[in-house]
Amino acid sequence: MKTDFDIHRLVRSNVANLAPYSSARDEFTESTSDMVFLDANENPFDTGVNRYPDPQQIALKKVLASQRNIKPSQLLLGNGSDEVLDLLFRAFCEPTIDNVITSPPTYGMYEVLANINAIENRKVICTVFHQLDVATILQKINAYTKMILVCSPNNPTGNVLNEKDITKLLTKYRGLLVIDEAYIDFSETESWVSQLEKYPNLVITQTLSKAYGMAGIRLGMCMASEAIIAVLNKIKPPYNINQLTQEKALQLLSEKELTLNHIQLILKEKEILYKVLLDVKFVKKVYPSQANFLLVKVDNATKRYEQLIDKGIVVRNRSNQPLCFNCLRFTIGTPQENNVLIETLQSL
Ligand SMILES: *Cc1c(COP(=O)(O)O)cnc(C)c1O
Image (cartoon, rainbow, N blue to C red; front, side):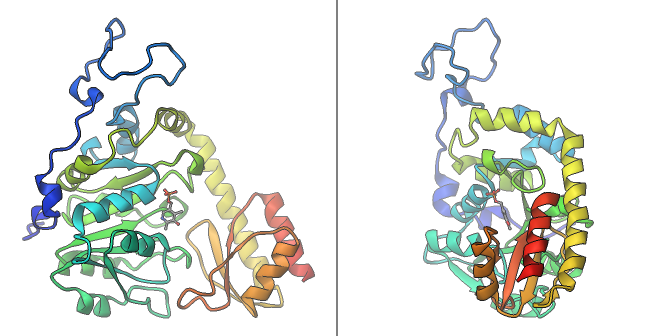
């Protein structure tokens, strides 16, 4: 699609002008086993991790990019998607001048990152159906609106955002539309990654923390045009993905069957829990979810939350979020854990 979109107009001037740090491993990459590396002040004795990791994560990006049908140059990895989102703020949003738009109820980190980076967060509450209020979002955009951050499937509501709303924003808005797809692998809907060629202002984040079962290694992804990824590469910390993370991710990504089985089991458990919850006497509503959690409206969220804590079950109270009054969020656990939750809820 031909558009007037120009990424260079959006980049902060200090970022556009800076020369990135060049690490020893950036300057010399042709490694063969018989070479002697005396360039990075590493300890020469083998501990398994005495060498700096690959700053461009070439092996890992090759696997992740091919799974998503994109080029490795369209992919940036971060220390969790939280780091990737922070890099987006730092690359494109001028502190105290620019603004972003988010749509609560949604992931709390967008607001925190806006605050850390001294960026105004213009909040446009979702509709009662937990969808984007596109008309109001379009009204709130001004010349300083660098990003709109949305989440689909959304956290904490669990629903997928309407395709036509996102398409409208992608075509009418000339800044970056960031779609956080942390839960996409639990969903029946297709990822927006397949639309990257069509929309130069589209940015997608995903993570290995949820469906892939690797929250502990901290690996997040950002996918966008090569031009956007090149800007982010300029400012990322040189060795932000450590050696252990790169190795563990490669190992677990090769065990595809295991991941798929876990996802199937979680989805099956979610269906069971959904039905049982409808019959719990103090449950008012269970929201349909395309993620690995259920948002549940109860009679008194604070009371039920505390009763569950007393029984040793920790859930998330989302009552203070707009449209989530008296709502608890239950992550889907193992069949055993879900049974404990069900039996406890029925006994309250
Ligand atoms: C859990 C979650 C993430 C994951 O962040 P990581 O830093 O990759 O662990 C991102 N976005 C949303 C909406 C989440 O719920």
